[in-house]
Image 1 (cartoon, one colour):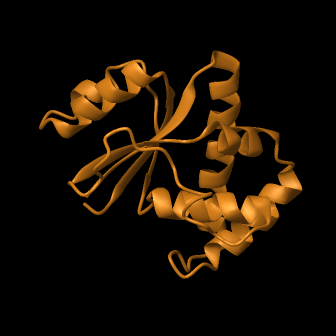
Image 2 (tube, one colour):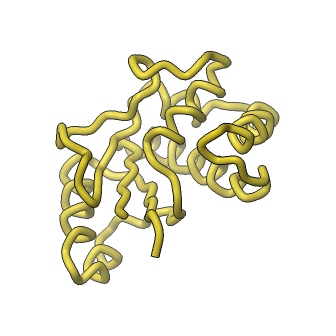
Length: 146
């Protein structure tokens, strides 16, 4: 099945409920919730943090480019991270050309090493979700599972 990576907009309660439902055996329950994820595979908080650093034009720094994890422990089979407001603003307001340039750099990183075309939908979904989160006064989350 591989590593699942769901990006979605929610408030804290909705995000926790989504993660709880996804962690149960009946994952179909989560799709019945109000959360509509952009579903991908193979992306973790590290890859998102790397994209964040690229968009800022900086070297990746664990102290600056980590997503927020309320659980405190992401060593299990699944995890839930919240995008910090700074990252949401950066994604929402990035110019199309900046996102295009970033996705090419991101594709070439050691963690990914894929064709940039594979990441284009991810990057533009993240921008769409960031804009939605701002409009709805919510947050962007990453739920992942092995």
